[in-house]
Length: 160
Image 1 (cartoon, rainbow, N blue to C red):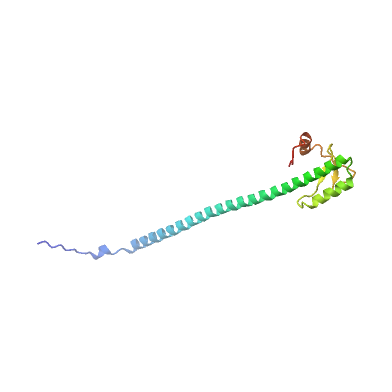
Image 2: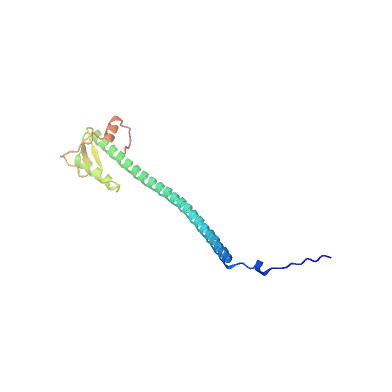
């Protein structure tokens, strides 16, 4: 019969103090690396989320601004078309009274608070009617690009 015996050496199971400290330090470093990696990943995900939120907010703001500006331009176009119709009505009668046209333009200006002024020029490009327009000195706008485009095409519409 064969007997197996295990002889344990006490010196084999004990760990020396420097080895234990090295293993403890390595364990602490590994745990710290794990915690730091989780924090870095969380910060990265937070950044991605905030960038998406900023993009959505920017898109929404640009849509609101687009609608606001579009509505203002539509109102302005309507006021200008009304002023054009009023001018054509006076031209058909044969005369345009400066006081009457200035009063009309002033009333139209009060309906659109975004405007600083509303003036009307004659066919030569001299501003003849509008709020605070006096008979002298007259301002010439016939050399400006928008005036040239309107002179070339009567159906040009609103030019900005």
